Image (cartoon, rainbow, N blue to C red; front, side, top):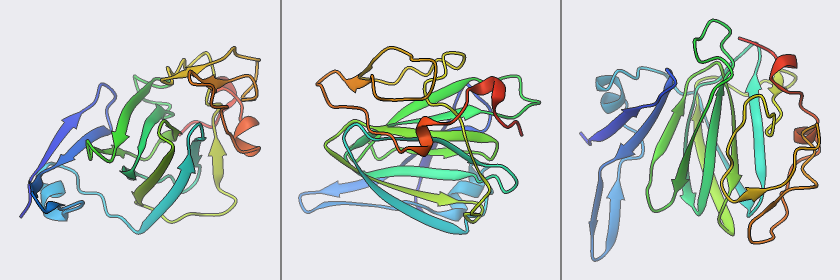
Length: 200
């Protein structure tokens, strides 16, 4: 059985997970998921779906959630680097509206577990990033919700990103410090801020 290091975060329900990596002159080997190790660490969620995406530098995906079928997500990066963020939308939580972020890279091999009840998103910091995640519930079309990625009430500090808040989730006035334009989907530029967003 492999070994993992699980670090709790300042917001309950978020965990950074680091696998044991076995490396030598040939490369490396690691277990990316071991149910026994997770259970031993007190994480007994069951995953039903695996997803993978590829994005270019400056792409920001999020902040997303499902309303009636909330998903727990175990996320990691297999190529490149991203800044990954979760925002607490649990109405009975003492940290409602608070955010936590972690840089996930192919080098650090960290994983981030986000319990149901959070909005989730990430910003791509490398030229290309391949992003993998396991979900505790299936994708349900029509159940999608979203939260403005730049809502000043939340105040996410996206690394390398500069720009002035235009009063909405519109990303046209933002760029990375190297001049790369922020790249958002049309849908992600229309989400409302925290005060007008769904609560769990």
